[in-house]
Amino acid sequence: MQIYNTLSKRKENFVPIEEGKVRMYVCGPTVYNLIHIGNARPMIVFDTVRRYMEYKGYDVNYVSNFTDVDDKIIKAALEEGVDTSVISERYIEECKKDMASLNVKPATTHPKATEEIPGMLEMIQNLIDKDFAYVAEDGTVYFRTRRFKEYGKLSHKNLDDLQGGMRNLLVSGEDQKEDPLDFVLWKPKKEGEPYWESPWCDGRPGWHIECSVMSKKYLGDEIDIHAGGEDLVFPHHENEIAQSEAANGKTFSHYWMHNAFLNIDNKKMSKSLGNFFTVRDILEKYDAQVLRFFFLSAHYRSQLNFSADLMEAAKNSLDRILTCAERARDAIKVAPETAMSAEEEAMVKEAEAFRSKYEEAMEDDFNTADAISAIFELVKFMNTNITESSSKAFDEALYKELFELSDICGLILEKKEETLDEEIEKLIEERQAARKEKNFARADEIRALLLDKGIVLEDTREGVKWKRA
Ligand code: AMP
Ligand code: ZN
Image (cartoon, rainbow, N blue to C red):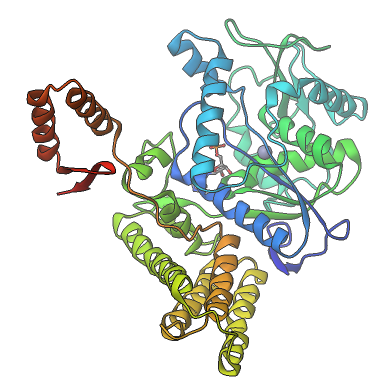
């Protein structure tokens, strides 16, 4: 299996630290709002990496954090006049709902920064003891970047170039730094902000330290894969490497994987630019699988421009797979229960080529676009060869292929039942109640109201049924 490693800027053979096991850490979202579909890209991409690894028999320990203390969360809490934990807990729950809709498996562990403060204090103290960190007069603890000789190795930046750029970027309060390149590990509290006690000052952690600490605690000093969006390469992941390797004296992560951006009009989709759609916005219009399919249709290292046309194309393509699956299921129900003919057996063997193609694509740095092409070849094969006379065993064998290959991509072979929105459901219930009370005038009124909304009701012996007009 080949993985493109940001560290070496090339594809490398994947060799796990421990045979049969993968230790993987994916930087998760900062929870102050509903996630947007750009945030969903790493979730879907790395969930697919995980699913493929599991399919290959690896035992994957998958850790993904929630950043639940940060300036934006604090700001949102102040605006609502609530505790920061109210904001973060709310959006962690909402994020988990979105992940479930997108069929992203829950991580083995989803640590939260605020629950890992003791580990952070310990690592910061360790860095101070080793002279990799120092305490400024106001109690801020900084990482001494230049002392970590390999700084810049992930982002392929040169320290002196960085220094030039950074000198102008110093913000107020940072003048106690020894060097503009140094970054914050711990900072003093400000009025009205959450804080924790520490040997240096009451305060809170800088952003980068949480991932170094959570990765160490749940996966160990040395891990196989560390992943996230490409905006995290610098400074976040560069700083994580500096902290972890300085503290633990070991290579932090062997492979670094980064997904490219989801753009809109060729600009990164982001909350700060305001050019975003939340996952919820998209779910109003599409089945969540369409979004999953949309992302996997492209290679994870290619920039992707979001557009309504591309979503429609994704919907139609996915539909072809789902229709094929539905047809196969129908065929299985009525197929003759005879043994597979020799010809059918040969065809099942022939169909194995699609799986090989699929695997080859996935093993080439998770080329899901090509893997999906292999699924389409299988779909075409099934559409041609599953007939009224094909045996049940044959139909089932091909269906199983389609099921398994789709499942690795997290695609479910069921069309989602169309659901009614809550308001309409309430009206239907109210009409039922009116009929029970023999208030036929109201029942008819509601029927007319629903018709205006394009919903036709039919009273049948099995109860009330609806369809779109
Ligand atoms: P954040 O909440 O901004 O820290 O982002 C959570 C994850 O989403 C990180 O891995 C980011 O790199 C990733 N991310 C944010 N915006 C985008 C985008 N437009 N396209 C792809 N990934 C993104
Ligand atoms: Zn991180």
